[in-house]
Image 1 (cartoon, one colour):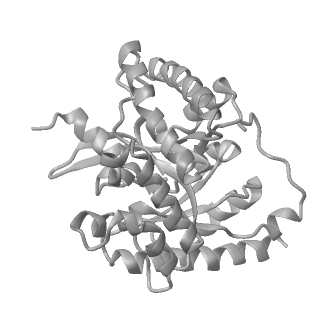
Image 2 (spheres, rainbow, N blue to C red):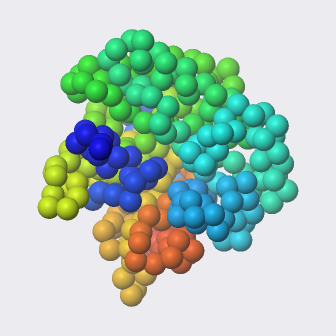
Image 3 (tube, rainbow, N blue to C red):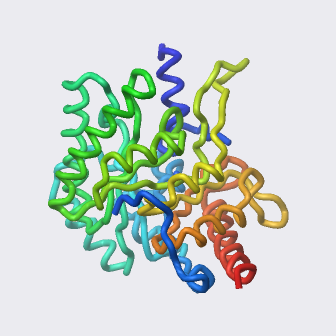
Length: 322
């Protein structure tokens, strides 16, 4: 039986391996942009592979076909999850084939979301070093795919300061290694300490490397968990809008999490207009990843609903800024 702490970590990694999701150059200050630029920035969308995780897990879709699947939804960029390719981690021929498949579809490979390769924030050096080395294979895979980044988790057993210190060391080492392959290493808010925006921002400032960054997710802001009657529940939440604002100065990507929609097509937990205004005002010019994680509709419908909401809201935010 899993321990309570294992369940808490499962809660924290909701976008990767759990159904629980709670309300996905290092810069030291917010980008300064011309007043008229935020109104003219184009919307660039990508599809996060976790949006189809149920279909992949049940076998109705195949991970090798990800680029073609995304193209059917009219996406031209994609974000991989390493868990669907673990057996191919060091298989260069496989990654080269996957790159050809994406190229044939006219789809750009953006990043690999890396999970379950050890805690980079482990205060014990031997375990931390092992975790760092475990990520090297995914940096190499990302390079073969033509990605710009790998996404990592900021987990570790220990006090807040100790885990942060370990993360600073690990990120420095990973970024130094990844720079040789022109790959960024980015942290996503995935619960626990990683959902404390100021805590992650300080890691960015301390590492201070151009290929060190963040992946702000509209969801996943649970700082601590507790046992409920039948399942784990979030006990403390970091304000999602403040968190995204904390992450954006260092962002190499943005993850537009979605759970459920009302009849008007609005997300019921997240104010997308408020989120996208933060993104636009920051001057972010990269891709925004569609990451549907709801259970009230099919994955296909959830992807379409999220994409439609982003397109509609991006235009409205632009109009309100003009």
